[in-house]
Length: 601
Image (cartoon, rainbow, N blue to C red):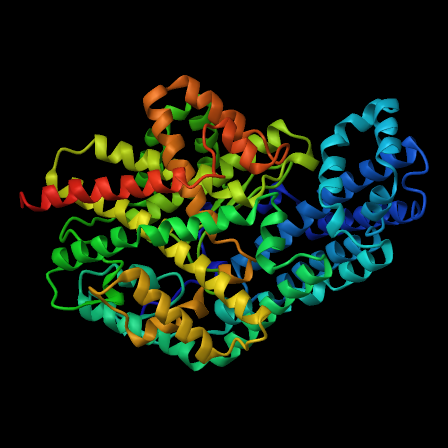
């Protein structure tokens, strides 16, 4: 009998997020958009007069903060509705309306920044000194001034802002294609049941102990991406062209420089990651050799990369058990931290299980003045328990920032976004290792820890290198065809996984299933964040309260300082390759311990 996904209407409400915490009805949402429109109108009336007086500057910045806070919540509401069922046309329309109004707001208020930049620094400083309430916006103004050389005239800024909605087309079409339109083949699972492959169950299928299930899942899943490779390549090419347009319009030397500068990060931080990982590629090859040994196969294939290396140690972890374990593991962060996580578990912050049309993967989205929302696609595996810890790390970062910062400084930069999530994962791993004496179970956990390094440092670095190379190709005038992308990706896969891995033909299409390639140089931050988190978690477990206090200050910082500076508060300097090398040395030491245990089996 075939197992099919539930429709959204069939899902138990207890396992869905409570969006009424944002708005109690669509009518309330519509009223919020109307209020944002009114505020936008008032801001627009100040065109040409933003810096005419301290009062004008204060009024414009205050109105902007109010409008953006409303639009942020309104778009979050429609986006959550859309993601819970991407096939729902009414929610698609709502999400498009919210996004359109956000774009319109940006277009109609595009004059604000150029007018601030056009004013003499001494004039703005005098305004801030004269008007007490303007002190709140001092950091915001400084950030505007930081990017002065990349800002355009008011008319040009307005024109660029008008391209915003159009520029999202490639990402939106890819999302709908990948989450709603693709229908994957059915395969037979370990129990002999016919199951339709989905984005949500693909990796769990690759975790199967039955190699034929893994191979069938792998070949059938990628057959869909093979079929649509040219279409997806055209979408990705459009995404890169969009990034090139904005980078050139703002006088950046490259798309990479433009992307990282948005977070006030130097491109060398990105290159440090790629270079340091490449200098330690032998460690990844060692990992592959250990995996091949553990699985006892003559040839190791890409469909063998997710299944546990330690046989017969995997177990189902029901969602309730996962929540209880995560709460215990996070105890070193303090009672109030744990209590807030528990509140999230009990107050429907989380949308737990996959349903028909639901967006794949997992994420957390903070909502200022409400609480964070977490999307999961729970399958009761060890990986899923770590995903829960991971996403609640994001959620708690949002909660601390929102509680301790005004709206304008509450959104932490993407560069630090993966630190809190991965810190939770490391604490969970250390808790599990501390509470097991069974050698096989310990080996299984060490396997999982190694897989975290493999997936979050090496794999994301490979993604980062792919993204860097594809952008360089496009900037050099090369076409990003399916053949070109396949060839590059296959070559990188062989380099990273080494001679003991068969880089199957299907893996050349993996780039086509990665939504993060539409996030504009996002993925490298998983690896830098993981490296920083390993260091922070080590300090928390070794030092206790002082390290926790430093970490809380980091979590509470939002974007009140540059992200690299906020991490320094937590004790980590990502401007140097040291933290990445330190993390890879831990990877090596975990392999030492696992090999020692394997010799005892």
